[in-house]
Length: 211
Length: 423
Image 1: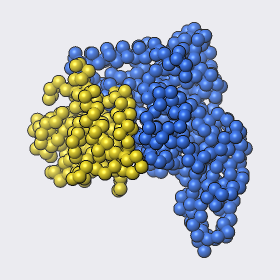
Image 2 (image 1 turned 45 degrees about the vertical axis):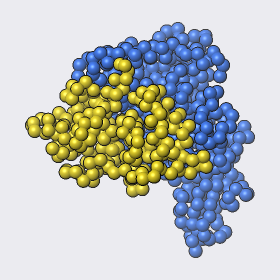
Image 3 (image 1 turned 60 degrees about the horizontal axis):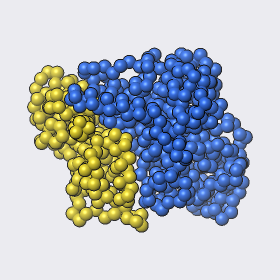
Image 4 (image 1 turned 30 degrees about the horizontal axis):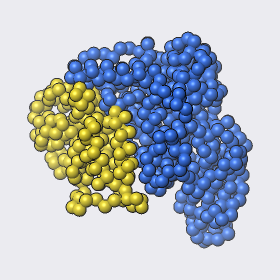
């Protein structure tokens, strides 16, 4: 149980972290794989458990057999992925349904009605073209949404609480890079040290614009 | 591998107990401290390392990706940001010695920012005397250099059909041949005194993952390779101190072997009675010993990846280059092999029907790639191709398509470049 809650906590944590960037993610290029996963059954869980550590392109550029997705999921658990035993099947089902490969090597057709993913936050106030892509790249949206609580608080809640104080931007920017716990409950947000200070500032500016 | 050699080693138990203790502590306190203090793998072992601080998270000790990339040329194309991987393709690798700005990047975790003045290397396990060495201690030992290959096991992976999972290395990306400066690992092991019963030597990296559950990067190699005079603790690359992305302040270098056998940000060396048990030994960097069908899972008896098979690539011309009819084209490339030597390289201008022997530069350092070349005057105009195929001194020849394997390792297929000859 302790393990379980730690894992969930870890996933939640990373999330808030990265929010906006002054420059586009380094891998975001024309014709590149999608920066977010296809909507469908299991997408939230898969995003929370995988995109917490990897950009979504690790999945969206890939087509694997079911056996390979199982192998990959099991290996990632050994590498520290916060996936509980009962979560393996729904994650593999999702991955194979949307990023599967047929035995003849061709890409498996996605379920009927599958809709091309849209970057969360696109078109919202203050969103430069780059911010949503950046958030997706760093997995912020795995645990945070603009207007509802997921694993972590909504961006709007963060903006309400910290956007009004003089040092709020600095505090949130630091939490993005260094991690935090206690502001929103016992689930920690892990540190995200690869984000630069400038990037964290840009992310905060965007989050604060969601009030 | 024998049953005995698969026996879990004590180090893993130590590691697990430390992880358990950490996880328990986290659960009790209800707080995740900075991953830097939490899962720094060396701290579980190095006596001189400071204790993990309680209280607020320490400053993130990782180098941001943009800072890493500032040290790389734009032709080093990124394959992923988390973890950071990137490489230049063959046409951007036309060097006898790979410049650091063109050396490929392959992280498993974040890039740690190591304080060299506080860094210690611990040597322990089956040794007469445990050692704790600082960077200055290593600098006082005999320094030497060699030009040598480093190549990720998955280099060229995307050339496999179907493409296995893993870093999307281009067909000619994921390798380089810089100059390595440092000390002989054998000298360090002699100082410690390797005891009888030693079979493997494990290397522990200081890199940390985004979550506290992420295990450290640990890989072991046989004692015979560890004691080979070419195996190093590298302190520099191309006569400069290692940059953070390449392992500052020190790393191991096992020349000719898959990149995972060379551990960056080296914090501990442990002499073991058997191969290390860990995810970088058991779950990846393995290759089937018998053929498997594409899509099949890794067989239980798969071997640990070690030395690279014979390989070559064409570094000039670039893909889709244009030339004038009658112009001589100075075709050139590099050939290498893990533990044997290149005997010859052949080129084909008719898709592999006939082959012509290319010129081969004299052999340089033992593990360096070798330049091959041919001045070629096309007889026809239009689109043409050139193929390169190396042979080693054991008679091994590059295949057109190497055997598919679940993790896409050891791509060494014949490289083919197309070019246009215009009137």
